[in-house]
Image (cartoon, rainbow over all chains, first blue to last red; front, side, top):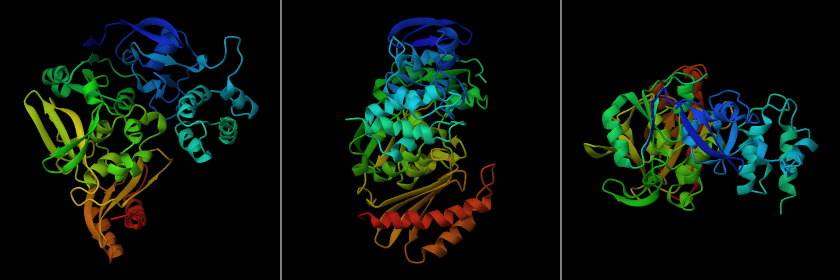
Length: 163
Length: 281
């Protein structure tokens, strides 16, 4: 059994984008804050902090999850992937990111990391998703700039070109 | 917006979890998917001395068929089973057609990845889809403590808004839905709801299961503190619905007035009944 007292700071180790990393956390430290402040991975954005806006969505063991509704200690030993994992080491955008750029699917970019991570998971499960399915998954994110049209167009670009 | 401090306890077995619950009782909260509990902790609507994280207990991450004394052939869903895991279960639409219709309305893809079926029932939101489905088909909740195990019918479990009959030392280990065609439950189902945005909390949700050609069992969430269920004859349904809506009254919050809730119910119910009648009884 794992037990951490309320004011105790413990070492939490996890795999972030393929690298084994660790930092200190209290039981109440949210995963989104742990990633940003503990591990310095600021690609994950923190919006509403109660699971509604979707900006903080990351993958835990490949599954899209709200990092503001996950405690850092819950992610102990897990593989976490964030938006930093998407582009190649030379900074080359991946297919999903490139489609967002081509379709002007972002303006301020605050919501984008979460949306990219959601669809990294979803399009793996359903590579040829219909527009209705895309919109259904997109309903778990708020974007206040684009009106969603560009985001839907970008995602359709990706599903269209999927084998 | 961060939660107040709490102890974090992650038992490896159900027995360890029960020992912790016996020790902490009401001062602890059980954490499974955290999709209702963690927002409330973040907003400081809820406080807890300790969180008991059961999400890694493998014995609770199981969907299986069981023979229940009351329900007959049933599907038992363990407390660590996520909503998306159940949604992806190949036999879902065959065994639990109502749950198959209701589940896509529960939260969003991203929250269903973590949110559990039992957690939603434990949370007991009055307009929530899974408690409504469980009440409508007359399912059961499996509660365990160091004192033993008991089964509670859905109607005896959910007492009021966010209030259940779970004792402080008890763990919901599973819920049981009777399998379709067992216990007089037909295969024809209907599910309708109105929410501000798809995936948001329903203002009113209505579910129907065909009992035979002439009658459906109808359930409604969002008009009272708990899901309400009644048998409705297909002939004269309109009058019966009007009467029932009047009896239920509804409640007012920032999303809708009581009158709007009654209107939504009267408009959604015929659609759900029609949908249920369309399926094979």
